[in-house]
Length: 267
Image (tube, rainbow, N blue to C red; front, side, top):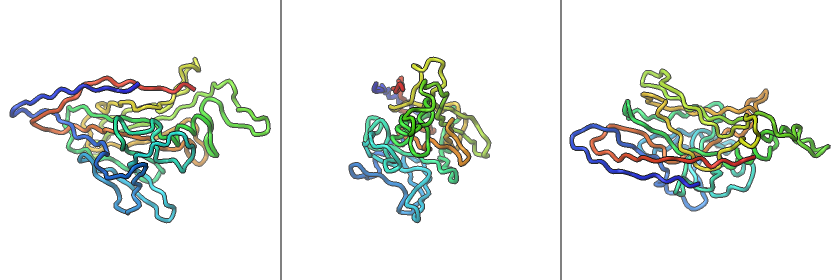
């Protein structure tokens, strides 16, 4: 189900009210079916007044932190398709951000211009790499709900699909002193329900409200999963984000009101 937002424009003379700086990745100059992953060594990029930190390893040809993309391939599984949002495009647009956590870089977003009482958030969804890994398993990760694949018996270790798996995004706000101002949890997949028919994986853009982060100056993102082993998380540690809305003091306010619906993929 597509999300529609109705905007009201309010012009308030000489009154300081929250306006919203929007990071939508649309002005980043990408060609069709392409991405930026930091291979230029710049260490990140700025969009909508927010700096997105990136670290690129030229020896491995890999990145961590933030990239941006307009890749539409949401059917090819595996690491080679790591820059694709599972929805197939951006939120009502072409470009979107892709986050990868490698366990070393902590790419905080600096949003120090945010108003104390402003509301902010972003549209978030799974990447194709993570989504198909959870749906089908891969060389490292299990199929959510069903356990591991036994090539001898050609069956899943839990054919009943009752494994209580989950994939969680935790967003943490920190104030100007570096103290935690609040956290927001958002399940990218949740298979813990007693009725297996309620198990879901997010497959479309879903609005996540960050107002619970309080008076945050920076925000951090962390991913965790029930599928974790001795070497860390097995589920691919990626998610996609678009239309990050950050409040900032202003005299003229463009205030949007809307309702977002999550399209969930039943297992």
